[in-house]
Length: 211
Image (cartoon, rainbow, N blue to C red; front, side, top):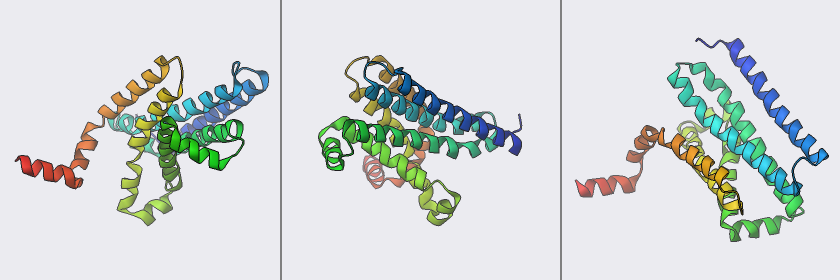
């Protein structure tokens, strides 16, 4: 199937509608008590899983586009990625506002002292960097460095479910499923990772010494 610019526009409209629909659902559940006995925890899980889901979808777009020869599909990847950062920003805002009462110093100490928050913060910072540099202008300005920066998305994808797994006190099945799904998705990218190996000096030295 050949994707036309009209199809891309339609897909973008659908992505906006779905994302805004989930935002409306979150607001409605907050106002009606639908987030459970602990609404703060409910908000945290809602926003965190939304960020992780959209990040996974973002990383699925490229292999789907290659598999079905639909290169134009890549034009919606940036939009989905930006929504992933939007939900990640909401996730941080919920924690900062409702758990820490906007105490920035406490946030910093929590990130340092709690490993699951350290992992989450690293993933968040990567998504922030990707969002800031996602425009065509930044791509032209950064040149070859742009792709190197955006390759960090794979680390963010790996760290996000680890953060989720460590953060829950019970009910580990769902975060474990997310982690397994991410590992499978990354395994499909093994050819991409192998292409990076020649760029790592340590790998080169080790390979040379063995040969």
